[in-house]
Image (cartoon, rainbow, N blue to C red; front, side):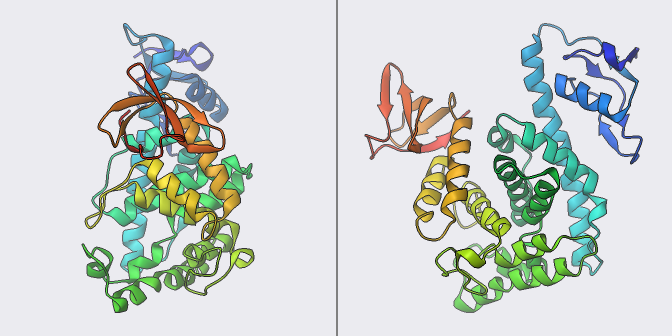
Length: 350
């Protein structure tokens, strides 16, 4: 287990002993992770002078190692964050106070990974799934929201507040009977009225939480409000809806549509994006929708996709004005989905 100066660390080396954050005592990087340039830089920023490493992984080039290490890193942070958050929410369900300092450090790590990633949507697909749909949904909405905050040039403090808003947007559902939350079919009118109360329950809970920013509580209250006033619980129109809630609304819709549920199969990211595009003319904020759609589409260039024709193809180019309708290469044929409107992407393979 060689001990080396951090200045001698190189991408591709494997960490052989956990690196702790001396300020908080939490584990910053776990044993077994493959070092990347970014990880090395962040360890240096901690003030750590020496690390334990194994030799450079064999038969791999540095570029490949960078990809492997980033994928592994976000999976580690996601698992740690999920475990801590689940314990926190289980405590709330049993009547304990919500104490956000218990997840603050792991939230910072996850936000850093999200905002520095060049393909967060691809990495979201690789993360382990949780049996609790509401919980998994909330974690992914949090990550998507942080990503949008970064695109909107929010400060780090604002991005963290927004990430909390995504994480806790459905926290009020803890106060609603699970047989209604997990019902594998259409809700009755009475059941839907009960579900709608989660916005108010969440607002009250977060508003009473020490250290919780008011914007987070407002996001829980307003994330089902809509630009045209058709949402709930207050039927607010655009100018009265907090921007955080507008962002969470888009992330909420996108992740819900692209995730399998007991009562509904997922659709492709492109079908969900087209729904958001259509909705931006009436119910979802048009400015934030456009920023979201323009940016996520770039993640999929080069990806292999399945078309409703049954063909597999590769996305090679985006249409500037309609990023949800790219040009796809199938064998030697180039299919412009903007011109071939009957053809659509039904799944992203890789």
